[in-house]
Amino acid sequence: MTGSLAVVGLGPGDRRYLTEEAEAALAAAEALYGYGPYLDRLPSRADQTRHPSDNREERARAEAALRHAAQGGKIAIVSGGDPGVFAMAAAVCEEIERGPESWRALDVAVIPGITAMLAVAARVGAPLGHDFCALSLSDNLKPWEVIERRLDAAASVGFVIALYNPISRARPWQLASAMARLRRHLPATTPVVFGRAVGRADERVFVTTLEEAATAPADMATLLIVGARNTRLITRPGRMMSLVYTPRAAVEASA
Ligand code: SAH
Image 1 (tube, rainbow, N blue to C red):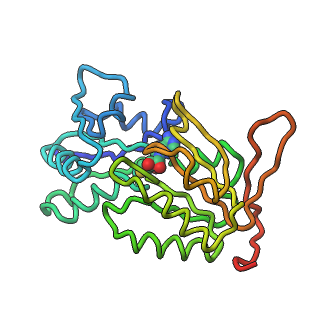
Image 2 (tube, rainbow, N blue to C red; image 1 turned 45 degrees about the horizontal axis):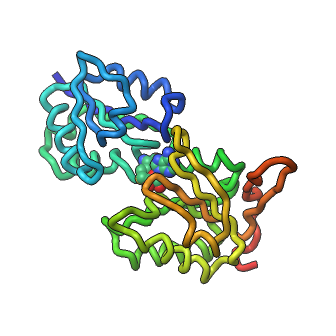
């Protein structure tokens, strides 16, 4: 019997963001693998085993899930947001490429989910309304110099930039350093959206400026959207938060 592995995106938080396809893939699985807190979001079932692992153990988790599927199991491995965005789908592909030939014959499906940048953008308006890119600020898997070059490139050609993994206990200085780097290309008043734990009970979203962003509160559950030169605010009577949007017509990046 050929085993299967579904790499399932859970969306940013609450179950209402889970797609029907993801729900069906989870329901069909005999065993669930994933970061413990993500598995905790799902109702437990007596006929389904759970294999929680730590945040940083992506490689070992992918390998264990593939080994289980290779024994004929119907396995699901979960990611927050979308599994293809800085998450398990690439980790699974890396292990398939590295692993035994038989893993290539497995039935592997990637089930998309709403990624954090889309959930955060939707809270404030349309900051990703024109060209944008996404970067992870984590230098666990790439040197900081590469991140700086990508920040320079993205800001200098007018991309709005979604920043995943802005900060953690092990990486306390990267966020401020990235903001200083972006200041070389963008005005101090450039809007920056901070979205924390969007879609969960402890959600917090606010809009600040590039100048203030270096010292604004952020943690591992925060995503930043740094505007481009033409990203703008619309203030609204009686509402604390402005609409943030990037118009669909491009302006010259150097304008
Ligand atoms: N696969 C995930 C991203 C994993 S990287 C996705 O598609 O969303 C982890 C980073 O994602 C966090 O450091 C944070 O920047 C962002 N993130 C994940 N969930 C979030 C949420 N609910 N609200 C805001 N940012 C989130």
